[in-house]
Image (cartoon, rainbow over all chains, first blue to last red; front, side, top):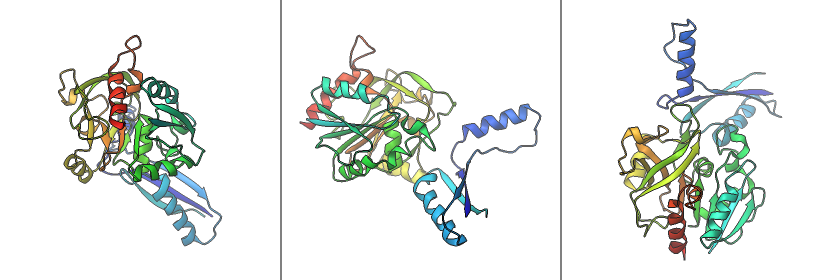
Amino acid sequence: MKVSAVITLKKDVLDPQGKVIHQTLDGMGFKDINEVRQGKYFEIDVKENDPSKAKKIVEEMCNKLLANLVIENYKIIETQ
Amino acid sequence: MKSSVITFPGSNCDRDMDVALNKFGFKNKMVWHNDSELPKSDLVVLPGGFSYGDYLRCGSMASKSKIMKSVISFAKSGGMVMGICNGFQILVETGLVPGVLLRNKYLEFICKNVFVKIEDKNNSYFKNLEKNIFKFHIAHNEGNYFCTKDQLKEIEDNDQIAIYYCNKDGQTEEQFNPNGSIRNIAGILNKEKNVLGMMPHPERMIDLSLSGDDGALFFKNLINNIK
C-alpha cells in the first residue's frame, strides 16, 4: 500500500527558502500570508497491506533517514 | 602515520586531501565508499564534495553507506575522524558530532577565503598550534550550523566548538559570519574530541603559490600530534 510522509521544519528553525517564497508571493499580490514554511513530501509504496504495519515501516524510515529529527518533524498519511 | 580518505560518489576534494596528507608525511590510502573494511589508520578523513548529489539532505545518503559502519565503529573506539565540508555534513548525519548544517542564511553558495579562530587547543587536532587565527577557504551552500538550545549549552560546556568564523583580528561578531551559523561556528568536535567536523578546507591552503599556507601549518602540526 501507499503511505505518504510529510516532513516539515521545526518551528524554531530558520527557513530562508520559505521566507523568499513568502516575499515572492507577496510581490505577486498574495497579501494575506502570515508565513510560508517549505517541507518535503514522500510517497512510498510498501510491500505491506496492513495499514498499521505499513505506517510503522514508513515511520521507521522517517526516523532513520527521511527526516533529521534535530530540525524536522514528520507526519505519516495513509493514502491507499 | 597512516591515513585513509573515503571517496563517495560525488566527492571532489578527496584527491586534494590525498595530496595534502601525503605532502606532510601521512601514508594515505583512498578507500571506496562501498568497501566494508577500513585499512589500518591513525586518521580517517571524510572529504568535501557533493556526495550523492546532495540528495535528500547533504551527507544523508553517504552517512548510510557501507564503509561508514566501519568509520563509525572506528570513531566510537577512539579513532580520529575528520570531516571537511561535505565530510562535516556526513558526520552530523551519522550523529558522531551534534547539530545539523542548514542552507546558508542568504541562500547563496559561498566560495571565498575566510578567517577562523581556534580557541580551545585541548585536543589532538589543534594542540601545539602556534597561531590562533587562520586563513582558510570555504566553499559551500549548506554550512549554516544549527543545534538545539540544549545541545548548544552542552557543546559550549564541553568545549566542543572547535572553530569560529572571525575577522583577521579574531573578532567573532555577526558581521564576520558568512553563512548564519549560530555563534559563528565553523567546526565542532565530539564530546571525546576524537571526531572533528569543519566547513573550512585546510587542504586548499597548503602552498603559498596556490592560495596560502595556513593549511600547511595545520597538517604539519596534526601529524606531529598523532606521532
